[in-house]
Image 1: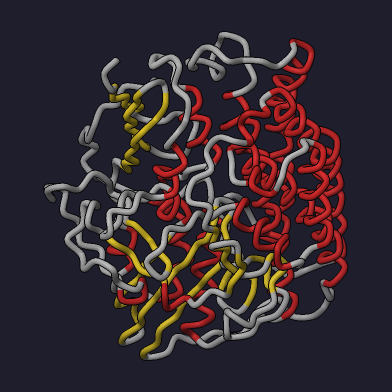
Image 2: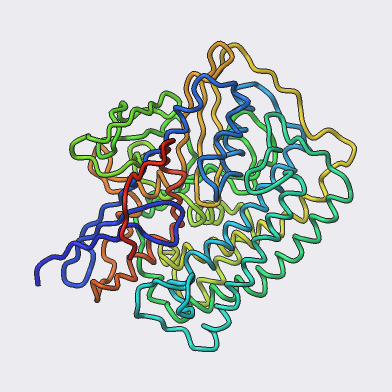
Length: 495
């Protein structure tokens, strides 16, 4: 049987537009290309503006994960403006960010990925769908469909919780250079704790058991979608405010895993290649010196996503990366115990983590440890003490903001000249994961993860879409386009 080319354009139930083209031979994927189909130009829009506008504009990169962009941009401005957040400001940032993490992980499992394994009723939003390979027993399947509805309420609860300190969610104005603009009160703390208790109950009694229930019926997906197995994590939830990112203590630590070792991260080794991207920018540039020069007619290119690399190597980012680094660094006993017990429950070794189910398990475990730790952070707020330090814009400066969004490592870089933004660059999680081939022709993480995926029925390529959705791609972050005249830019056939 000759090789077949299958194009899934766009992949549905993700944020934004992603095209996946796979080459199938003998019922398995032998080659793959990941294509971001729109251009992101927020970096160009920010040029010439007051640096303090950056965190508000950067949030508009995405409507699903604006809070991570507020955090990365504000960390970048803390650095560029030379301001250190107050303790209350740092803690309240973590709580706002934690609320976003919880809603994002619940959103991903129930509303974006679970329907790859759970068969819902025929009306929308449960259709259209690829057919076949739905294995859950009817009772468990029906319960999971009910939890889909319950999870919508949990997302609302998480947003309501975050808005207590953020003012509103998801686009929030409170996280600013020097801390947050809101004033902590005991009433707000008590309300936050009340919402958090509801979310903890859902995570413990519904989310974690549902992930295990799916894994028990689909154990083969512990062996599907491994990818590059190199893991990168900037770390998230600052415990101190050290200017040196490498020395800053974070609840989830900075680190990377490669060749069986956990190593440190040197931000200076981050670059972006554009050989196969629709950009005529310089290739292999450090983001602090990055360029945004679109070239839609570039020959040989096939994506609007650039190709971030660390020291020339391909790295996956996201919850799996964070949990692998956290576990192997021994940074969180609860996380390590849950990872070890999960592997023992499925009689699996650590290699099973690098898989579709490994990514889903990592998100659920991370949601659990973050929610539990947020209880402790609430107790650290000092009512009556300031939540923000004064920040002034310098004539010139450079800044870097590194954090981890729910979907993975997120970095913002700024250069200030004459008190305005001279250059701004953002390297987002899906730019790492959905990147095309780089200057050395190395496939990106999703492209590598698709190799070997089973495709018994070309009309229903359910394994490849399960792999892609396990990464929780956010193409709105990785690519962006605007046409003020409302011109139709493209048509897509949804599979």
